[in-house]
Image (cartoon, rainbow, N blue to C red; front, side, top):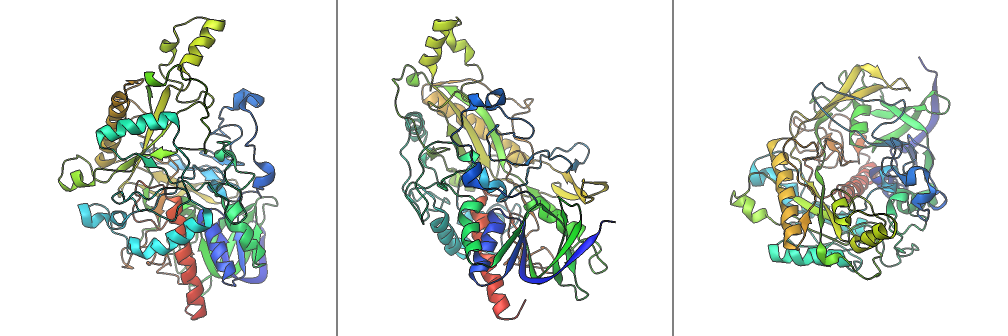
Length: 569
């Protein structure tokens, strides 16, 4: 047994996790006057000093290519993490496949995410009422609207007011101008009746709260040294620290929530990764924001006489209804209209300037599609360094040759390739969940998770529809599809966890017999325990979840502050 070091100080709140949900909880609670302790499993990360956004790939090993430690490239802002973390295994049930991304650093994934910031719409909160699948949320879009507003105004999100069905407009900064290839794709979409509008990304196009506008280095995944895009360490944690009410302990691997004899949470037990000793910290309130799966793991490992199956798990639903986003990636096309272009400015933010929100709600109401829910389309191309879009099948356009002849062919084709991907909704199902693997522990002695995962026909047919749509867009633009996918192709749909949008596992609801948390993300079984990451999600709309995680965390944290004032917690 490890040595346990108790703490005498009692905080108003102990927050586990420093990313979107944990950072927002710290921001709101400290400004409300609460003394908070934040526990982060990874090391400290200083974006201003450690960002590599101005480095060239040719100065890195293997030209900056990804490795198991750095899947998205040598300079990506992933300090210690990925789908595989040394000494921190996880298992999958036979015949199942799941990829679990962990990000062990201050701010977590907010340092290297795509910054796509989409509001869930009114339909997304009541999906069961529309098609009889999955569950309805216990809250509505109107309940979360004020928190979407405040979050966008705080972090800075660009976009445009379009009035698209179930794609709510927000508090936007001006969007950047579309690039040449985006205008070509947009014109094709107009012919097909597909909306192609400015995307919504949390990247500044105007200065905001002392943060400068984006300078268009297009390296957002490397962490932004100027703070021009959103990350928890640049936007949420500095004002929380400035209150004097926040302490942060890094290298603190949370093991379990500790309980008193009355069944209330008393704090958190964690392993200090440097000393390998177990430390117990105390708090009047515990906020879990460790990511959906890690939060479930902590709860399931928090076993006691009162909660033999894990804390907040009287329903047996902790870990259940795990969801990821449906992905259909890798489809690319050659657009002859973009060949032999003269050199021109193709600068922009580190991501798409335009995207296609889901447009077929009315067809689904008339049962004209073979699947429920929907997806949006993301696409890329342009005149940046050749990458994924200058890939499959392009060699046959070069015409062979060496030296000058080869260079001439590359220049002719440079910028003429466009790649497409979809991000679609997964409907929760009983076959997708995580549980404790009683036979395996990590290097800290903490039991690990075992994953079960399954796509249903809705998701598989959705991915097929997306790939057919990519073909339509490419051909309508006068282009040629470079790769096709069939049922036998492993890339036909993403693997579970691959899109890194996992949510669910501590479902919120208005019936304590059928959910883990109440409508304010407060545990039914333990009134001073709250969850502010993606775990409370009832469904997983096609909208990337980070903005909704932050808005929901803001709402939950305000509720915590109000309940403390009323002495209800």
